[in-house]
Length: 334
Image 1: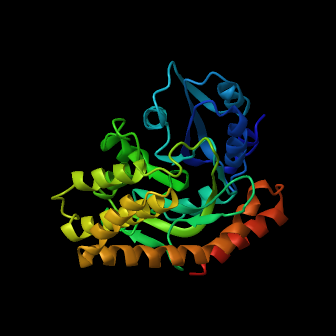
Image 2: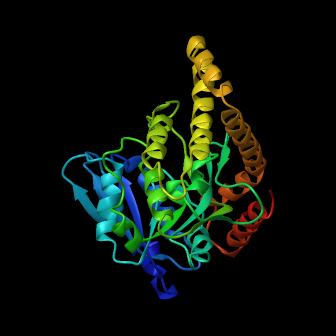
């Protein structure tokens, strides 16, 4: 009997957890265990979409009591998540990447804020096996941030991390799910389409540990930012879109490309980026807004570190009280 089975008497939440996985047998067990530790109520089901793995990913998922759906070949995370949404039996889906870990109060935290929203997002602590160089990802501030239109995630940057989201199943199906033609930023594109239909909310509360590791191929790459540029341009003319908003988003992406070029010694490229940014005041304003935003995010990191320590804490009332106290501490400081 899994921890999820033993908790069944606690009125499971009507939530399907969808986890895409490719050759993640060495990390998947920790992710699934973090789902099993959800309190006070577990989700109704766990779905692991094995995206063509050749290791023991499927066997590990089955040992944890997850429903396993296998792809005969690797199709990518976007299509794997779409498979999970198609199979979900519950009105809400919580997404979790196979290398991430929820904090014990993740579902309870986002569930409380679902009313009137198509999407609820919590924050993350991005770190490796230790917490050196850890950073907070989410929204800064002391109160939840309304996401009334897609503009709220276009600039200064997308604050919604996939493993921290709770979304309405019918809404995702209605907009066609993840766009499998996108090699990067397909989650950003989906959030835009969802927020065009109904508001969302982002919480300044750490709800999961976003594990960073060498297998993340996009780390240190400009490809995700270029994908976001193209996505924002593709929505030109929508009611929420404006040329000013687009220029601010492009400037934020260009600033990060400039920093990457400097770090790699590509001075000519960095100079071209700097010239482009300085050519228009709206772009300078876009960068300044981004820098202020990130300064505020850094203020969250010490409190996020306290929260993520709950991931490996033993179950029990004392651990629960400590984790909940850490969560409130993060939400209450800005």
